[in-house]
Image (cartoon, rainbow, N blue to C red; front, side):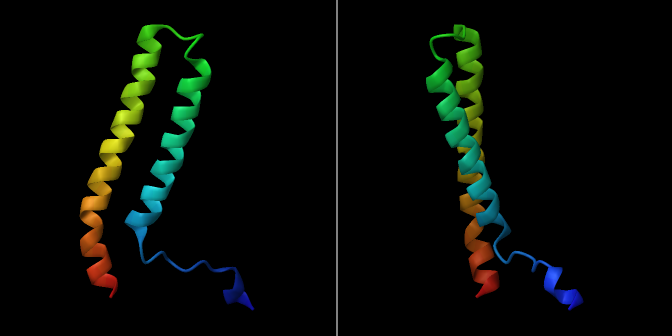
Length: 73
């Protein structure tokens, strides 16, 4: 009965991280669209930079995911 509450470790940590980053991108995109009339150009540039940085992180995670798939096979 004790083991029912344990969560198994993820076998695809990069994939899980990629999905969380994707959620963050969606949230920032929504914020950018909703606040584009209110924010200054500098603030919009900062949001745009955040979106670009998340996209770069997503690409890097995806490039390293091949080794993860081979290791788990």
